[in-house]
Image (cartoon, rainbow, N blue to C red):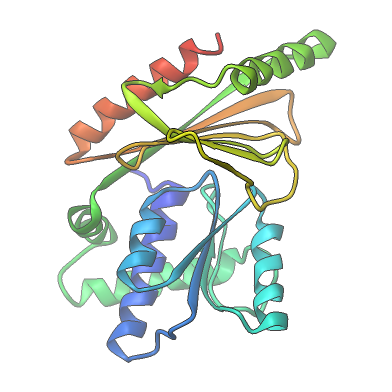
Length: 252
């Protein structure tokens, strides 16, 4: 099996944080930053190491902005940041993703685990066994031309104006409309997203499942991101397939 961006990001995060914890180098105000379309496994790992989990919009520039904010306001100490599309940043030497350092960290982690008789895949399995089997997928629907743009907008407006109470058997705990800066919760309470305005819809579901819809910023596509947590690969894949089928039935 090949590693997704979520998987490689979490391999690096777990390696770095476990090493820092062993040396007593995790600060009380440490923070892990991820984009809203990245795996919820990051949330669980952040909790394991007593880090503040901070979510930002899609685009690594927003992670870079958080680093600048931390330094200017002395709020948190940046520990790690990543996005699902293979971008991550170890350290604060840059304000954008750094593939060279990411590869070096994977090599360092591979060498470390090899001494223990483990491959990177073995370690990935240990991470799943420790935190749960988090699985994600992405569905992109392409709609070309002026008519396509209108169709994409209609899909999003349908979800925006009539958000479902459940998707794939999962209760919607929270619906976030980042364009209108509105959060609607299952208990009837409301709030704001706290992030910049963007044409993005997010469904926070029970049992660590989620769905997110947004138009591509570079292509005539609308993207649907989804994630679940299972008790095994088979369980997670079954849940993900059901969630995907249900989500797509809402827009197609």
